[in-house]
Structure formats: C-alpha cells, structure tokens
Image 1 (spheres, rainbow, N blue to C red):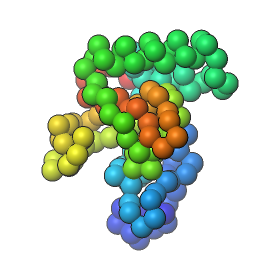
Image 2: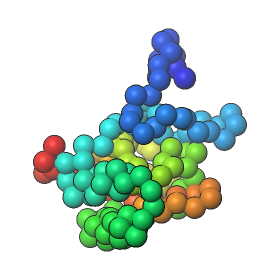
Image 3: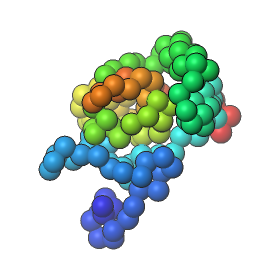
Image 4: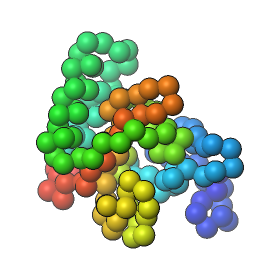
Length: 141
C-alpha cells in the first residue's frame, strides 16, 4: 500500500484495521489512509469501544449492540447495509471517522464537507449494517 501521493510505501496505522480488503482491482470506497481514528469522546464512540473490548460474543455484548443501535438512531445516524470490502468495517463495534470530501457520491453524499463516524452495528456474511452520522462538535475529546 502506498500513501496518497504514491511516493512512499506506508501502512495504515489505524488500530483494529490490519488488512485492507478489496474486490480485485476495484479500490475501496474510503482509502485506508483517509480513515481517522475514532475519538470515543461521546456516547456512541464510547459504546462502540466497549463492544470491541469484549472479546467473546456474550449476551452482555448483544445488549450493548442494541443500545448502540438505539443511541445511533437517537443521534440521527443513517443506517445502510454496506460491503465490508468497500468500507473496511469487519467487526461489530469497529468504527472510524472520515472527512467526507465535497462531491462524494453514494450514501456519503449527504455528509459532504463534514466529519462523520462510521460504526458497524451488525455483521453478516458479506454485508455489514453500518450507522453513519456527523461527529458531535461538542464531544469530550
């Protein structure tokens, strides 16, 4: 993997994102070097971090996932089934932030020019239920 200018080889240093998935020659929708670490400074970020910290799948983790879904809905997050190879989200609770460029198409077009959080809430064989919302400008981080 190279950086965005293509001159220096670089690995994405985002915690929890060790692999970059792709569909053959088609690039990911969000380049791994454009992913920003999640601050976990607000309710949704903190809840996502708690879910990731529990290793096995337990009933407690399932309740936390339901709570995360309700929090995301209450904060106006948009939900969408997305391919994990396009958005690099593979596990429930995994999240990152992204500065959406103006002119972005698809589900992210409505967030053009803003910083958003993408958080995986449910996982299936090839698709993930991802909640996307504008990061809280009044967060604790």
